Length: 639
Image (cartoon, rainbow, N blue to C red; front, side):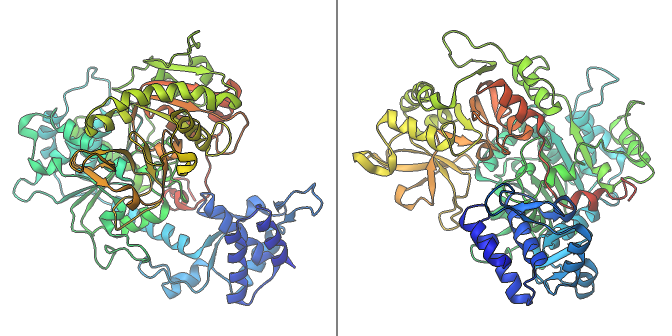
């Protein structure tokens, strides 16, 4: 019986227990316990947990699904494609899009569906993920269609003040173009690598939008997926505002603090519907979201659904970074998955009229059927932080394009010291990582303990970070953190007389706590409280620059963070980064992971591992299955 086989696979760790339970539940509520249906249910449950939004049955049909084909019990294989689709189409556990459309069961407010599974062509979805995808695509296309009533001629003097002329008349100022798009469209998607001026651009955009409505300034909200990212965008905008011309500044509106998306839309523990939703939209005219590549499909769909119909949405991110931890690669899909925007003739005319921008002749023109998102998307291409020939700049470019990354790396010096600038690689065997890493971490920790004030300590904490590709194994986060705490004589959950909480312990929150207002990914530091006889507290920097202190006993689930995974480091920046690769290949090692690790550093990167593993990782691009790209760009591909 297939359920017993799935249960056994879950016991062996091939499937999660949740996947087997979901398949059993689907069979129970639908009355259909046929093998094709239960296999599909377990598969889609597993793949969503791995980051896919849906399953393309054509990729799995007729192939081994679970288990080892050469093992004693063999593998569980999928049926051929046509019989599989026929079985699912007949099953009461599965709906098809026409069924959903006729009954209106794709609403994000209710999440109701007649069935737990939805079959759309060869794509099989969990019903609510199909609703998220369909609703998000529809709302984004509505935002992208048409133009605002802003007269392009009115923009020119404001843009001239905010953006000086480029050094070369043939150079396209994409920051200027992005500002014009943000004024002329209700959707603006800005992607750029580190140092390409995303923050300067969005700061100028906010000033521009204020200048266009001096009598009724727009209500602006700034948000980011994590608390750390919210702090960064707030600090960066405040700093960038100081570089604008004095008469361009709209006052306090530019210095408002960003919030997390969870807080913005009012996601509440135990409730599936946020406080702000289509029935109770946000009170904003402009929503700016930073680090958009970190946002998963459900969160992006809920956020866009909470916008009032008149509002502008501005998304900032780096399409080449890691996708969200949860399901989807939303920002990469919005950016066209490497496709060059096909700007319309009207876009070109408005850019020339409003911003004096004329695209070069060799720039891709519009195909017969372009997506409305094309005219909303701008890629910032010039880095102001890294020279094109700088170590980090060259390494990031090599990773992004799949070039030979090893040729960019500098040789390791005899003293093995961490470089003050540039990039370097050391072939440190994984078995020696826990021992070798102590020197790096202890040197940094000593400087941190000498900081004096908590503000200075938090700054020093972020000057250096160890990033690992994996959590487990000798080169993983757990082993590295344990090695550092062993050297310090602390940690270890308080065993052997060691203190669990100690001065200078970096902590990473691993679970949202809505009461304490700390969220997964927030990083703080254990430090004495001078106002409470030096008792230890966990200190977190908020977006407005203030500090929040929390007693260690009140902290939500957390872990030590001398080292953290690259995923957890998204939205953060450090002066120097030590990036540790495992000894063996892993599906986790991708081009996006290496790129994200390298671009967390402002000054220097040292990579520990073999050139072979680095090359393998840099050559493997992430591919997540969803239908969002097709929904947004179907006309562009002629389908």
